[in-house]
Structures are given as structure tokens and as C-alpha cells.
Amino acid sequence: MKLYCDPVSTTSRPVMLFIAETGLPVELVHVDLMNGEAASPAFLAVNPNGCVPFLVDGDFALGESSAILKYLADVADSPAYSADLKARARVNAAMDWFYTNFYQAFVLMAVYPNFGIPRGLGAAVAQGLAAYGEEHAHRWLQVLDRDMLGSGRYVCGDAITLADYVGSAFVTLGEAVDFDISAYPNIRAWVARMKARPCWDAVHAGFYGVLSALRSQARVTA
Ligand SMILES: N[C@@H](CCC(=O)N[C@@H](CS)C(=O)NCC(=O)O)C(=O)O
Image 1 (cartoon, protein in one colour):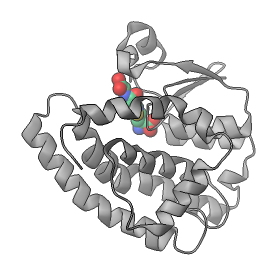
Image 2 (spheres, helix red, strand yellow):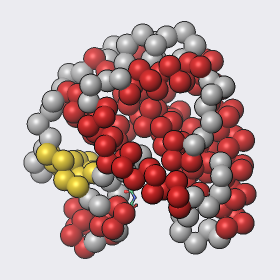
Image 3 (cartoon, helix red, strand yellow):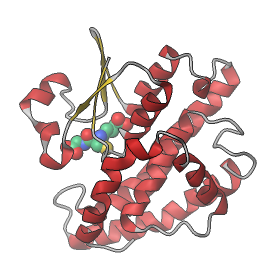
Image 4 (cartoon, protein in one colour):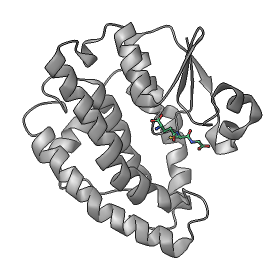
């Protein structure tokens, strides 16, 4: 199998961490987002969406990090994606929550506009979006801290699931703008737990390598 990915990509990192931890035989193919490689004809021929991550398993090709994680978890028969109907439904719900409520406010609004993403927003719109995103992100951070992580070590209880791979990648993106999560003790403890996993540092080396560059580019302080 091949995974087209980039460690600076928020949606690549959870898949890369999961692969590193399970030891699945997946070759990582770097698509350099900072150099615009996702829009190159060569990559568009692989994935017409021009997005990473993207998985190729023989003649089977799959986009969307959520679907890729679920596919790989089933290939690996991983307990991080339980076969039990209700436990799996809980993981699906937590993943959907991260990809919708949380991603929209935190990633798309509170963080990305600080770096001019999407392009062409203009400073005033970017500033307004970042402020709106920050306000709404706190609503979801409170839910994550109090209701989702309040009663267990991980998002869906005391065992790690796919939702933790996704959620921790999204929350740690906030480090690019020094997003203040000091008011959320359960989130801080959970992030520390995820960062203590043996493969975290190796998988995130590229991400942390560009963080300081991103910080110096930031136009708006979240
Ligand atoms: N919903 C998709 C989102 C994929 C996505 O937007 N990936 C970004 C990086 S996080 C990308 O490849 N952007 C192309 C670019 O920056 O040129 C997923 O979860 O995989």
C-alpha cells in the first residue's frame, strides 16, 4: 500500500501516526504541500481532488482521512476501531464531531486564516473569521474537555480509538498560533498522553519543523 501524505497536513498526521503505530506495510509518498506539489499534474493524476492523504492499495484508491483510517483499522483488525456495533458507532460519532463542529470552528476559522488559508481572503476578512472561529472554538473545546474527556483517558473512554488520532492532530494544529488551551485540563492531559506515544515525535518531526516558520508568518493573533 502507498499513502500520499505530508506531515504538515492536518488530515495526514492522524493517518501517519496510526500507520506508524500499527506497523502496517504502507509506503509513505511525500507530497510537498508547501511547494504546491498537490496541484501538480503528476499528483492530480493520482487524486483529482489534489488533496492528501490519499491511499492506494493495489487497484483500490481511497481519499478522505476518516475513511482511510477506518479502512486501515479494519485491515489491521485494530481495537482502535471496535467491531462492536455500539462502540464503533461512538467512535464514528466522535470522528464526525471532530471533522464537522470542531474542524470548522477551530481549524478552518480560528487557525487557517492566520496563514492566509484559503488564499485571497484579505486581511479584514481573515481577521474577522479568526475572531469568530476562536469564539466558537471555545464552545467545542469546552465540550471536548468536560463531556468527552471528562470521564476517561481518551475521547471514547479509557482506550484509544481512531477519534483520538484525529482529534489530537486537530488540537495540536492550534500550536501554530499559540492557541491558549490552558483552561482545559482534560484536553491538556490528553494531548500530553498522545504526545507521549512512542511514534508521535518521529511522525510529527516535519510538522514541528515548520511551526516556527508558520508562527512568523501569522497575520492575526488567535
Ligand atoms: N476531507 C479531506 C481533506 C483533505 C485536505 O484538505 N487536505 C489538505 C491538507 S490538510 C490538502 O491536501 N490541501 C491541498 C493543498 O494544500 O494544496 C480529508 O480529511 O482527507
